[in-house]
Length: 125
Length: 440
Image 1 (spheres, each protein chain N blue to C red):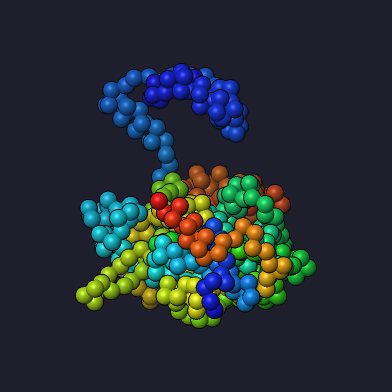
Image 2: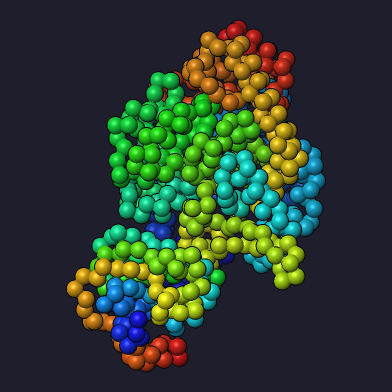
């Protein structure tokens, strides 16, 4: 998995269209703190971009994960189910969270890594 | 309407009203039925403290104080003996001031008491996890149903047995009135239990849960196993609601039966009747549903020196963190009542609890056998059953009280009253009550 192929959302998910995997950004995991639990809420469902597909729980809070694009939610990454800390350790790599079957991928409204880095600078100020 | 205790200027008021698109302050209360509003001014007289005391005392003297042994009232609140040690312990200042722990980890004693309460509720209900308590049996049912809606967000139909405490059903109806769920009542049979055939016929993938009384409102033990078999087909969540929690001392626990969410009222455990409250709701479930559960949960852990300690846990479900997506708006618990129940259960122990439940059941069957011909149903029960009599007031004159009448909720059950028997009803009173019924 190479970082320059990731597309980011404003809600801090990323998607790797070629492999149909979704995760959360390094920035997001840092803000959440230690992640302890993930739950897929839309398993097997056809979802639209922006629908809630999973819930992620950290020691501080519980947040929703939104679909970065249209498609079908397949499953969770078994590695992070048994070891949620992997999301903290390698959020934009082996700590990917959800497998999706993406339908007609479009990069509209999504950001490449560099753009996203600029974006988080604007929100963290 | 001008109120001397509201410090808003005329301008404040008109600004707020225009923002809300309302004309007058009274419009804020338009949802309250007119017949419940007081139209004229309340004529408040001024009295001295002593005069006030006399007036109130005169009113309170009108209360009837029945002999505990001659009271057979059931229907959701039960007359049980409250051991003196409970009042003594809960009135200790460390406990008496305890509300829900807002700065929790400082109050290790309070947290430990809640943790013990949760453990005992789990053991009693055969479940794996319990919260720190809820307001009462009715709100516990509501929270249990809402848990089920979180487990099946796509399903829309909620089943509730007609035989479940009708007051609880009313509260549930109120909570659900602004939601998009279909609330369906599973009818009762002539035998006073929920209708399995109706369930068999109507089960579908849209049903999210089925809630029933265990025992039911008529005191009867429902055919839970048969119901669970039907629910299993569509993986419908089963919810048991227990108003007389003492029954679990001898009944098979809901967990053992395979029920998934267990809720109810624990007033019987050392909490006096006190005109209907404060009482104690409980809610327990399997660990798989832990994150769908509302309310506070206390967990046991170790501090950095390896010593045992208690914390509020899984709080990320709760309102102060999850805001509008919290599992409930309940951010409190009934600490003091839960403490009473906790002391009660610890005092009796496993064997004592079972023994007390047996005494209740034995005495109830004692009365039942004496007045069998008045009984409406002929099904196994715990400590409560329904009888049909014409003129209960005549018995009141002899000092006997029973009920409530169930006709208001069940028009087909005219002149029918619940009769509950507890350890406070002595053998002589039971015999005298039966004899008085004969004389009617």
